[in-house]
Image (cartoon, rainbow, N blue to C red):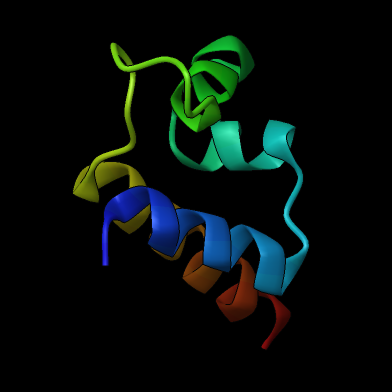
Length: 65
């Protein structure tokens, strides 16, 4: 599965907004939008973006426990 597919699945499953996802991946919202745009081939999500998103979710869950 490509990073963009994994990221989109996580965002959909957890209902995470673009602003929060950009924050989690340490990118600007504009960059996030460009990476999510299928017509823009210059900016794409990578495995690091996915790992950053997963780490962010884990930290949020840990803070609730």
